[in-house]
Image (cartoon, rainbow, N blue to C red; front, side, top):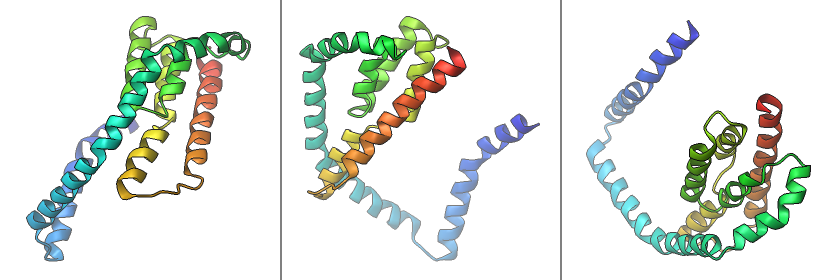
Length: 178
């Protein structure tokens, strides 16, 4: 019964939301098309301002991956990781996830293809993908695009959140699927 309710609601939530927004705009006598066009102009300008930050992040990610630095780091950490019941194969995802969502998704896809989605490693990668965020990417792109120079504690808070998500993923997947 609940599954049926969730399925019906999930099919209707977006159309209902669109109808509510249009009805509200008509009630408030807002010119929907003009507001849409103005938002599109602002969005395009924001996209142009983001391009240099995106290129910089992509170059840094490519250098980290292609230089072999990540492989050396994983080899050095493997003995400690095994003692902590952390599969060393998951470390590239843990490193790349705060930096780049697309790189992390590619690593997750590779793990799922190699080990399977129902393996402990596949489930751990999927859980990590959903439990962490692209912290450095978000800070670089969004803070850079609006000119924020002093991010205060945003970096530390974001990376601590990612670490908590990583640790929780390992513990929960180990307990539930291990």
